[in-house]
Length: 292
Image (cartoon, rainbow, N blue to C red):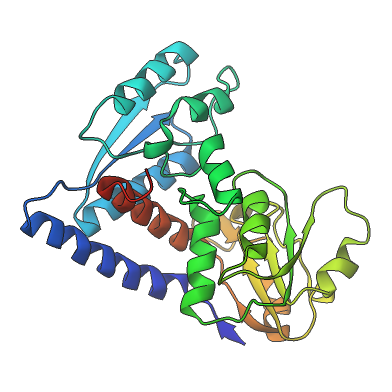
């Protein structure tokens, strides 16, 4: 079993991005600028956004955080998005999800200019990704592809099972893994909460990608010997033995599944760190106008 070390890879990728940004600066070019909009003070969202802003600083990018209270109106939020769209100094924009119930997230995502949609959530970017055209790919799926590539994991002709059909991870992941490219060329089965014989399908996977948001749902009896297991989950589970009162768990029951695998991601220290790196890579592309 080989651990797919997101901490190691993310450090390498950040060094590469930092070198690119330093070269842009030395040549008198425009420094990439990421803008994050955060609504409310939910602990998890605060943590995610803080990590993204810190990563910008580490690689030499500019960043701006725009905050709103939970009671911000949809019109006010859309106006802020439009302001960023119209600001030529701001290259990439993310609106941290989830949003309060009175705000339609699809309307917000569709208001972001596709050229600044470094999260890859705009329908135009999703459509371009599905057609194999240049696009901003959702950060988590892109991070997983980067991990598979850097560990030189074979994908051609393999059976890839994706558990979870969210538009952020599961759906784009299933499309990317079947594309005629590397990583790709898999036969893909996309499963979800209504899938019958889920355990049997998972056992047939050469590459199993768990992205359903249910802690330790994937157990050893659902994984075949030698499989590659990618765990996208990250949930807080009560744990009295921890000073914080909780432990971070993925969708995979790591201790019992890991011995059966050829490669597996840890939680934490796996996919999450790659997601942030992908966001930085997309912001660099946006500053260079590589996609649009």
